[in-house]
Length: 225
Length: 217
Image 1: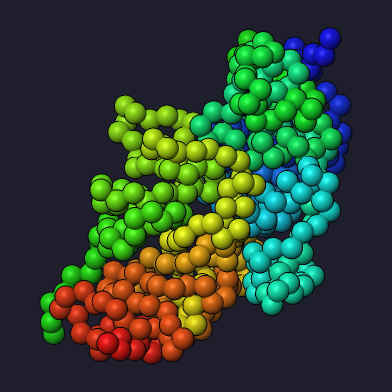
Image 2 (image 1 turned 135 degrees about the vertical axis):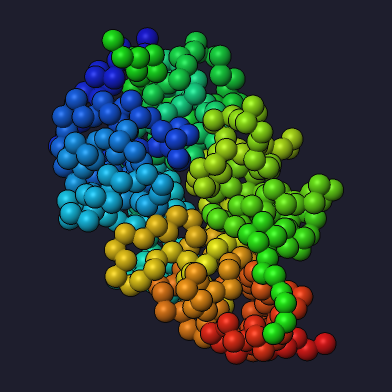
């Protein structure tokens, strides 16, 4: 029997190595798997490279992981937002490396990694600081930048309903980076808001087919004891 | 000296909303552009796109109608209209990069007379600027309209001959809506389409960092 469900967050995060590249899904607070991110603090991995759209806010989730000194580098599109105090302090102190990527390029680099495409060309960033040091090429009279894929060791994803094969759907705007990050990592760990029986998500409504998913962590394990 | 009233942020948003034709698909940037969602005429069907995976975004909800799972690019709660659709970030930016968005309305630090847009970093030394989706939108949308105050808080012009801040994209801006005027970016530079009542062309020119042209009729 195929069963990707694990007991709790600790079992879900087992084996993540120091120096891993870890993708973190979500956009704003929607679809952000905060309890998995905070679980990494207890799990203990260090020198992490984080791929996420934002660099956390307040002192929870990603901000808490950074505050605990576990993050070496962050790759994101929008590090500065309301309450991104932890990022700003660490960055100013020179304790955090930053790679800024335009949001659409970030999404496409992730998609390309999941699809096995090592590089692609985009008009985004041509004639700006983003283009510095990157190869350009002309197609049909227009200049494009070459951008590389962005694969990861681990993706931390939050989905709405998930079955034991790992099939996922998402709620509201929660698909965002989750559905693409799920395809781009060696190990994809899904925080399931609801665990459902096989077949409960109609086949035509599955957004992330289970083959992309390695482990399914029930959301309930988030309740502190 | 003549009397004039600069448009409020809300009035600027309403002024832009007035010009969006029925049937267009529009993306709204952060700041004043976001307010456009609340200013569209009720009888006009315009489809709003949000970079985080929404087509058919509606106005902001009443407090009792908030769905915490539906937010816009500025992370504010929004509503979904009947007919809305939801998708992931790669599809969302395929719509943008692929030229499927009719119009993007963005804020700006500076716009140059050749259409150069600077709206992501406030200096070349700014090591941690926040670009978000601005660069993708600036090159991908069919048209770029900018909504901004005519000058900075200190009175420095934001419409200039050359941008001094790092560019978001070169030569992309088609039209600018400020609190003082509506200005088209044309092959000969800034062309004034409209000025708030009571403000002279010369007074507008004095607050602009590039030559303004009168519209040829």
